[in-house]
Image: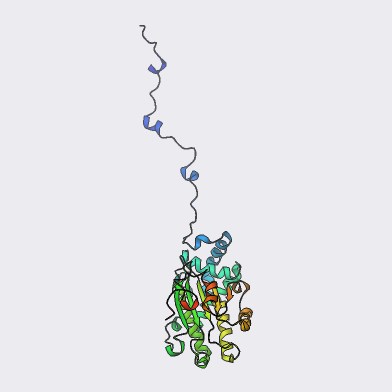
Length: 310
């Protein structure tokens, strides 16, 4: 067997160190090839349901928060200090929070995604809350004999929204209830705020309202009753956006169907779509409410199986 012929490797220059050969040198820096980091939004179950247009409006409104606070709190020394609105802390300098986004979405939805109009609504709401002293009103002690039976919160609907009952006929002394319209409005706002405390703005941000008119005479409404109804409707329309999932007027006699339209001048068409008027009687009411509220959550007086309202 012959010896192998010598090759050029016996006289070639020594190879590059192995480590240099095993680490390729990229043509461009790695940072240039890496995908750009996304400006991720804080999310929860509710924000994940936002449409692209809703997100766009919410982000624009959020950018305006320092200006909104400066306008709303023009008389305060620190105009942009963080506040708490409906249990959610809002810092205009750092408002990238999922629950804050849910709050802002309420205002842009209430104004059909018009950010300029949503800004005006938010400024007006913050001003009104200060002027009305909402934080003091929620701690005000109201006469239980007058107001104690007028409002109840009981159960949830099939989506988890709390169900709030307004029982306007529970106190037959209507002069005591509506004699002082401003006091009635303070009680009504305090009850609304108490209802909102049940919303987490993560999974649930709306409620179902049932307005029960059993025992209420619509034919002999006083001036104060009319004023209280119109002012309360306007107040909730202007300063509590998108809190209603559904609203039912129950035990309204058919001959008084016109009561349903009393609210129309004060409410948007979008809000009116959430309203339903239901006649008297558990069977009639249950036929409408049971598709929305489980029988175990609905009081017997409304066609359900739950204990009556305390």
